Structures are given as C-alpha cells and as structure tokens.
Image 1: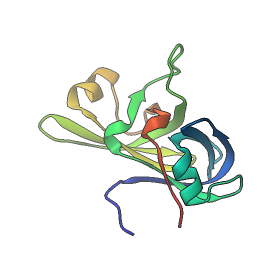
Image 2: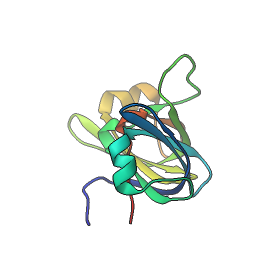
Image 3: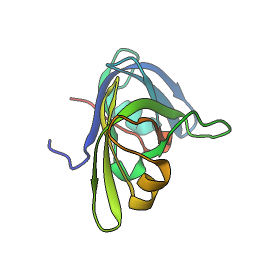
Image 4: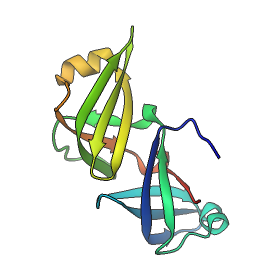
Length: 139
C-alpha cells in the first residue's frame, strides 16, 4: 500500500498498555529512540500488536512541531532529537527535513516559525509529536 504520509519510521513494539477504549503502544525506532502511539484497543487487536511486533510509526508532517531545545512542562510524549537537513520555503509555509536516529522526519511549519527559530541546515532540533497523532502500520 502506498501512502501520502512522508513520515514513516520503522521500529519494534516494546510495550502495549490497554485501557477501556484506548491503548498506548511504545515503539522503539530502529535508531533507538522511543515513540508512543495512542490508538484504540480495537486497532491493537486488528493489527495483532504485541511486544516484538514490527511496525511503522506514521505521522503527518503537519503534526510535527519543532523546538530548538529541551521543552519542560509539556504533555507531548514524543520528543525526537535530530538535525535539520534541508528547508524548502514557499509563500507561507516551509517544509523542514530532519535527520533523527530513527530515520528522517518532515515538519510542515510556517515560514515565520523557521525565521523565529533561526533554523538552517545543521541546526539541532527536537521534533514534538502528540501520541494521538501517531498511527501504526504493519507490513
């Protein structure tokens, strides 16, 4: 299956915690960083997810926020450290490609945010992704 989602990070499930309707699934990315996905219990069952399952963590580029340093006092679980590889700007928006230990991410942010953060190739960043914005796929 082909998807338009550019951010597809391979990894292995290390934990599944289920609640009444939702579950959190922790995925160790191939580069060693962890990502947490908040998905339905039904999705866990339908995908056959368990510790050791091989998955791809999928995240739309519009759901990847960037910070230039550590962020405290924030509920966002997923904080992937990386380095800016490339910035492509348009009239209002920019596409920022980031190299992380788990693979490559793309973040779609405003041109003003790129300028305000002083981003350029080589800049260290932290990609911030809410657990509810991470989908999981199995091959």
